[in-house]
Length: 178
Picture 1 (spheres, one colour):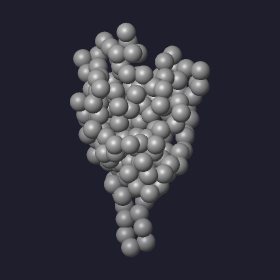
Picture 2 (picture 1 turned 90 degrees about the horizontal axis):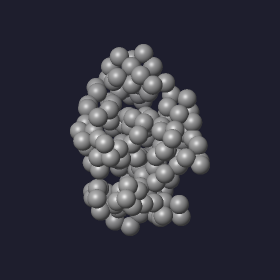
Picture 3 (picture 1 turned 90 degrees about the vertical axis):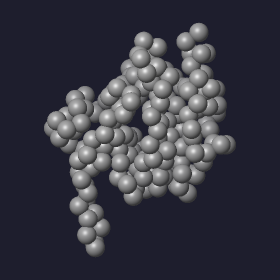
Picture 4 (picture 1 turned 180 degrees about the vertical axis):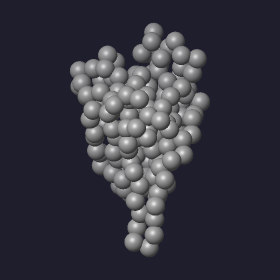
């Protein structure tokens, strides 16, 4: 597997080794020992989530306040632009983001450590999206950062995303930390 560090501490792009032939392909999508040794991911995952979305949907940018979740995200079918944002005001990379295209074709995974906001927008007609989480989901603990926060200026590849009612009310960094 190939591991690429990013400008955000702990945010890692993982390219698993894919074995393919005329029948299709196979790859190991997760192994605790291998991911700990090669990617430095030591926190065990306790919950797997799956979402299905249509082109133009933007989910996020989500985080949990008291129970932060690390996430190992990947695409089963389709493609997304996936984003992690540093929301720790004490961090030297506060307000910075990493964005990467994840697809069923490139097999890339993104590891987003606990304490970051995370979201994605759908680039294909539909997408099936998987993510492993290091903590359980606590709905009362959820927070959201505005997808179009001017303090971050994420270069999303879409201009008019389809947002949930909840995500339409997400705050900017200034509103969150004022």
